[in-house]
Image (cartoon, rainbow, N blue to C red):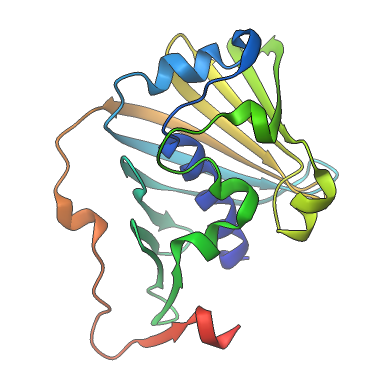
Length: 218
């Protein structure tokens, strides 16, 4: 379950780290407005995993940090302690309870389809079907689906990504996988462009923990 949560979180971080969200017809206007001038972000988050029936299977919370491009950190506080750190080159997943760190290159960890959103100038409309969803729960929704669903499935991608905005603030992210499970992430108390300590985006494994290099072990 923990690695599954990691995969979802990485995908959402990619959306936040996107360099540009240009699309014909202005469909991505809420995302464009959110990303305009965004350098860093800090927010509390609450994450809920729902099964295909919409039944809650897991709830977690913690703090999220972003430094564009390509650096982010998710610190889970409950129900378990876990940190996910990307330094722009590699992703480190540290599970305190298991005393284990999994390391993988950022590009391979993110998968081919979501990784297209990371860094530089990206035209989302070239790779995704972008549409405006109906307003709901007081939010304006942007929906992204892969133009090539088969390729997305083979790459471990997502069937749909939904982003909920209040004005120029991103409030929620819903990610539905190909098994119709949904991870819902709500951002709270967000701070836009705070000064973040660069050490947040570096990771040194604590003494005595097992370090698994996923590039060779998978």
